[in-house]
Image (cartoon, rainbow, N blue to C red):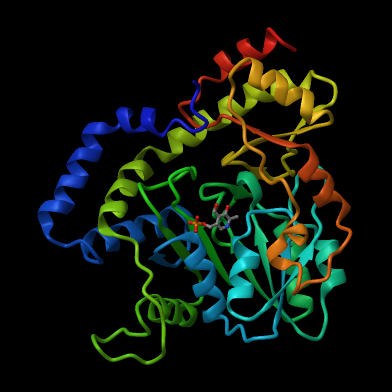
Length: 361
Ligand SMILES: Cc1ncc(COP(=O)(O)O)c(C=O)c1O
């Protein structure tokens, strides 16, 4: 069976480097914090050109920490995209905030700045924009709306570390930006992990404090924080992968072009649009398919795995039923009925998949 994401092929490709890096951490006796974390944070800062980087336990933790650092209070409203993974809305709710669901652009599937603007009210404090499937949200427009209404902006780049917009790196568009190192992400570790990025030194200090039990001096706790740290062993793995990351992005882009060429010629199927000025990490290679049912039958017949990211807009999720008012959000709803994601990573044999599909399409 073709793997949806071939993490084992990646492991094989850099195996000796991984083994050495893992062994070094195990032998060092330093498993939390320490030099490997410091080096990795410096490398992330150099890669993104963000001045402050703080690693943490997961992308979800990173959003929670960002909301705490920005001072979210119970009853505050935060605008999130209606069509994305649950984490941004979930983190807002967990802290007593109220997520408001903005519609998306029908082609790029990114949060719509126009829709964001319609949701702004007296209780609105901020916006969480998601870089969906690997390309940046429309930051010029979103930043303009945020600025005009005095709102903070969190950039959720869990899926788009390594993307760019008009030459600017993802993870530098928000007051705070976050990413995830979940294993299936373009830059993933061997468990949970995440990071926060900010140009604001004061916010960076708060973030460090919150992520480490509210403490920067041992056993002195200035606030009640949380325990959210990237383990050194994961940082060691990520440092190896980061060395190969630019090559992998190139390969991902080549693979996407091959898919695009094939699917672009098939009526009723459209690859997710890439907005002008964006480069894409293709955390997911996602198609919009008019007749999804029969396309899935063809994938099943050729044993090509697929995923539906995501089968419902967030406003239809049972967990938000009580707290939020359902909105129309027609583009988000339509996308949830059309999307199909195909096997994808730098090690995916896209030609094999296309050859399989050619037999049935
Ligand atoms: C857009 C988005 N935000 C946040 C997260 C949460 O990241 P993590 O799984 O590291 O908690 C994910 C994970 O898939 C995501 O896709």
